[in-house]
Image (cartoon, each protein chain N blue to C red):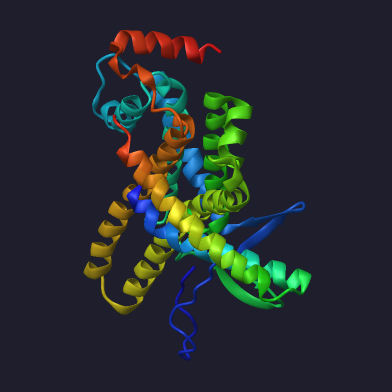
Length: 280
Length: 60
């Protein structure tokens, strides 16, 4: 994390790409990005707790605000998966809200500026107590791996294990398999890396940009960039969630078939099928 | 999906080349696997384009 350094002008801004260790909890090293993740998680959990206790049929302002992302993403998922949307919505909305909260932790006052003295590689250094979770590759990579497991499991669920393996590892025509299988594996790997690197790169770069602006300019200019970062945080959370959804759509569609065949079915029919599918 | 394509094009080639170089270092066969890695990486990049195009061409 960036921070202003010593008085003798060694360097104005110090950048750490990885999360810095604050203390050890038994064998586990607690880093400042873990604190950021915890804040985001506690915030979301308490919001969900509040919303589940105080929800009304006619939503109030806060409930309406909370329901907006659910309705929006629900509509997008329902358009692509008329029969499976009830099962696909929860993981997608969880990813969206967690990434959004994790991104916005970086905009809170005190994050990245309040430091703690730690001993790193034998010398004393100051590490920020909180680092936004998405500015740590560990968090984004873990989320990308979860997304990978999600779309592979949906692929298996839709096409069967045999069908999925055949689709992934056997080319059409079969004599192209030795060439296509490595290509397919690299292509799948690139999904995980591109998902994780995009989120990490955007949020980490945003944090550095904010720190540089704070160091170089006065009060008004960083505020403009704070506003921009608020937009980027929401966009990146949406991109992550929608790309996961796209990968699930691709995995469930299968190469031979089309999308869900039930586009023509009425909304009530689709809901009934979804409820039955959810009961499995 | 298109947002994702640019990044995947580059990453596919990088993954192919890195895997090739690592295999070459491990098996002392330089430059055999590096060349294969380049071909596979570029192939995977092209496959990604095909993947997106195929999804776009499907009737909705």
